[in-house]
Amino acid sequence: MKKKIVIAGGTGFIGKYIEKQFHRMGYDVIIISRQPNHLAWENEQGITEALNNADMLINLAGKSVNCRYNEQNKQEIIRSRTSTTNLLGKILQTCPNPPSLWINSSTATIYRHAEDRPMTEEGGDIGTGFSVDVAQQWEAALFSFQLPATRQIALRIAIVLGKDGGVMTPFKNLARFGLGGVQGSGTQRFSWIHIEDLFQIIMFLRDNEELSGVFNCSSPDPVTNRELMDQLRKTMNVKVGLPSPKWLLEIGAVFIKTETELVLKSRWVVPERLERAGYKFKYDKLDKTLHDLLS
Image 1 (tube, rainbow, N blue to C red):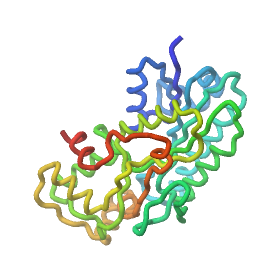
Image 2 (image 1 turned 60 degrees about the horizontal axis):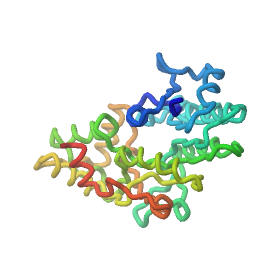
Image 3 (image 1 turned 90 degrees about the vertical axis):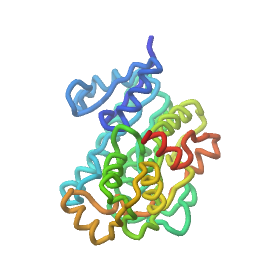
């Protein structure tokens, strides 16, 4: 029998990459999604059957945070994360032979705006505000379940860099049109991870059965926004990059229906637990990563 992986919310940029990698390794991959041709969230019996005898559950479900934070969007961002996590937990409790590992997505935005020191799992300061509330409620939903046969891991994922989507598309466009200068002060930290390392971390956590709890999923070399934009222009061979002051970003965010927090919050996050456990990053430096993604 083929090994089986279940990915909830697996139709986005990250989910599609992970699905492709597992298919290459010979796994049967089942996607739970609201999109057609996948296992529907309403089909609880089908989800139970999918999870039974599965190797692993990976939950990435949740409305994109790339939107304006009005009340309706805020409620949907939280509900789409907590309700799906709660449903999966309840189904796992009734599953005859549940997966031995449940990896739930979380976010590195759970930590405060930090320009003074890096945030680790044990020594990091939890922040305040809407994005932090989302992360805390998401993780609370995951860890509210007592599942003796299933390890539970929350991945506090930094900004994921990959070829086929995510932030690389808008970043490349900014640089290409001469707007790839510093954003805001330029001193805010940019914590990131190559999508291949994200997948390899999932495999590492699967293989190291003593590991559970919360993990920062971020490269060990976060950079400032100024360093990010300089390296991006250098890799793309673009000479000029006009800066974007905060007031200009605020105006632009309204027009493109997003929030400036996505570029102005200083996320200084390091993967202390992963490195202590022995994980070796393939893409530990930003220049190496950008060369890989832009070549």
